[in-house]
Length: 211
Image 1 (cartoon, rainbow, N blue to C red):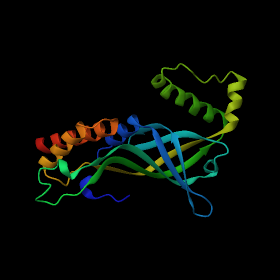
Image 2: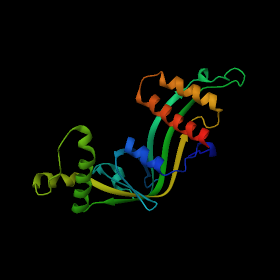
Image 3: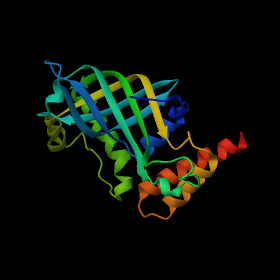
Image 4: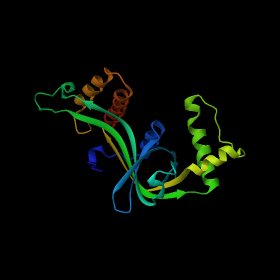
């Protein structure tokens, strides 16, 4: 990922925040011919003692379920267009439009999981993680042979990140007045992306002033 120093995020809590906000990632591998292949998947996330792990599963017919080894997981954050009309120095500095966003790239090793106990654990923990957000109460019942039989239709995976890149592009290369103007412009717009980017920009602007 192209990562100018001004936009590099060093705090690993930024990754925690991204995956708490949206644990639906893009998982990229290469097939035997070296061609990239991507799947879009919900994941379970854990970070402990500097180690980052993602777990989830594919549908068994998904070709990526046969992949292993090097992989890239892309974690998506909020993003939004930023108008140069929001900058006080728009005319003097000949400002141009840009797009602000937060994203993470995790580079690591992918391990497929195909034994019944591992699959049951992944399915059970995914339900525990996401059912409350949907107002549901479904839980995986391993003692039910019908539910246990459904495991034959999936392949699980464990992804261990070896390198993490966090990019929070939030107008850090602009003077504070421009950042404040962009925050105000974003706050006038509807939608979670505009609000999310405005919140991130405001937090970093406050830290910049405190520093």
